[in-house]
Amino acid sequence: MSEPTIYELSSAGRTGVRFPEADVPLSALPSAFLRPDLPMPELSEVDVVRHFTHLSSMNYCIDGGLYPLGSCTMKYNPKVNEETARMPGFALTHPLQPEETVQGNLALMYDLQEHLKEIAGFAAVTLEPAAGAQGEFVGVMIILAYHRSRNDTKRTKILIPDSAHGTNPATSAMSGYEVVPVPSDARGNVDVVKLREVCDDAVAGLMLTNPNTLGLFDENVLEVIKIVHEAGGLVYGDGANLNALLGIVRPGDLGFDIMHFNLHKTFSTPHGGGGPGSGPVGVAPHLVDFLPTPLVAIIENSTDEMPPLYGFVKPPKTIGRVKSFFGQFGMLVRAYTYIRMHGPEGLRKVSEYAVLNANYLLSKLEKTYTLPYKRTCMHEFVVEGCWVDVPDVHALDIAKRLMDYKFHPPTNYFPLIVHEALMIEPTETESKQSLDAFADALLAIAKEAHTEPQLLKDAPHNTPVGRLDEIKAAKELVLCCWQPDTDQ
Amino acid sequence: MNTPEELKYTNSDEWLLLDGKTATLGVTDYAQDQLSDVVFVEIAVAPGEVVKKHAHVATIESVKAAADVNIPISGKVIEINESLSNTPELVNSDPFTKAWMVKFEIADPSELSSLMDAKAYLDYCSTRSH
Figure 1 (cartoon, one colour):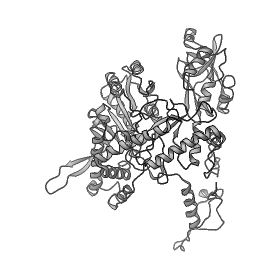
Figure 2 (cartoon, chains in turn brown, orange; figure 1 turned 120 degrees about the vertical axis):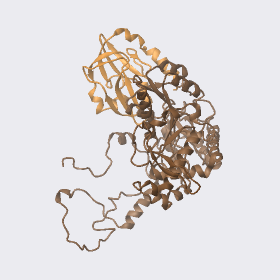
Figure 3 (cartoon, rainbow over the protein chains, first blue to last red; figure 1 turned 90 degrees about the horizontal axis):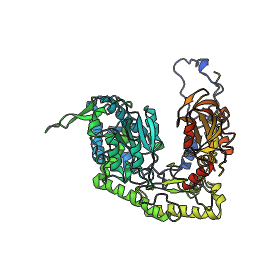
Figure 4 (tube, each protein chain N blue to C red; figure 1 turned 45 degrees about the vertical axis):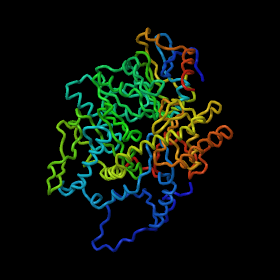
């Protein structure tokens, strides 16, 4: 890599800050707290700024190019979101301020709850969960609380389709449930025959992503929900793929009892470095009382002279608090901005274009890359990253080679039910030109796989670092160049 | 793909070597090829433990995925392969001998009828995506 580490840039005695002369007596740090073996890099301010600027320029980001990471909905994050999140009235408030002094924040949270309820067809929404996985956890804890409230204690299983995100079985197991997988049928839907076989009075619920991780709308969704409900279970919706449905289908109307939203996917708040995530949860009427505390509500209705007074309320059978304060408030401001900027018609267009873009890309690729489930896709699709005539070339090689073409690779080896999976989600924010360039790169790589396979096996060639050793990375968990002395 | 004749197979890609009242369990060549480079093996049972049919006995983690290894028939664990925790790559290089996972005493020989022979397993693998 062209950039040295910050330790290599260190020069003895160099500093970035000159402290003023002390106007109090100096006292030495207790020797027990001094670590002479700890190498602290010594650099000037400009050294540090340049070092991190160089590193940041090596990073791939959505502001730099297409980011087709399937199931992650890496859409462009509009800059207006950043403007609103930085408005002093939002940015400078403190979560311990009295409620009367943060009425604007509470009004925004209340409205966002209302908008999410309307978008997905639920009776109530909590904004508290810090990310999608915590949203799932809240959902499964609500399932647990619901059955317990009815003294229905024999339910020990959660059903998980084999196309599910890994967080679904992880959440169920973490909540103490036994995970029972449900296979997919030949069209990529939940296999309803197999579902019936495992549905009994021990089923607490089913976790379903729709569209699923194959990018397919489950054609059996109404029947699946009916079967689980008839067995006395609840149906949890993983809202990871909500970007395909805005303004078209409401999960609540389909019969889902609970669903989490990923504001950092569907509603354009940043992923990763610019994050954090945010995973609000919506519930049907029979589960409203179990939501985490607190919810934002109108405490006193508005009058001719006065706006309403907003405040916090505690649902009567709440599962409790799941996060300090009130969720990732900055993300709520960004998502609210996105929803208000688009309006109902605009949000429907978001989903229509997301689905159109995915199908456009699929149509350009499906003659070259095997499509295991031959159906019109929703907002993403999964192809096989391999060819029978070049058995040594794998999805991973294609993904690495894409980096040489200046594209972020798609999700690979997921979902597990597709051999050598490449899971591609372009999102609605890509233009035709951008989609064409990406398709051209994948088609060129398919040619290279047959003519110069070694080019793929050794890729990437044009990146700051080459092919990483994944085995070493998984087995030798040494993350810093300085090894702490564990004897002390 | 290798499928030794003398072994019995499951539809979740485990193999069993039968020797009178005892059996040895591991995962198949097909399984290790699908997983690619294995980086961790954790055996979840201990000698003496009684395990029921389909119980989870080990977890394999590769650079691509994590997979559960389940025991296809009930039994009592006699011995586990401790060496796999330090050399998980044996699952890739030698899935049928050195990478055995659990030896156990068979509780109910009638449960063996659910297993496939090498030919049936080979046919089963060929029906799945290559």
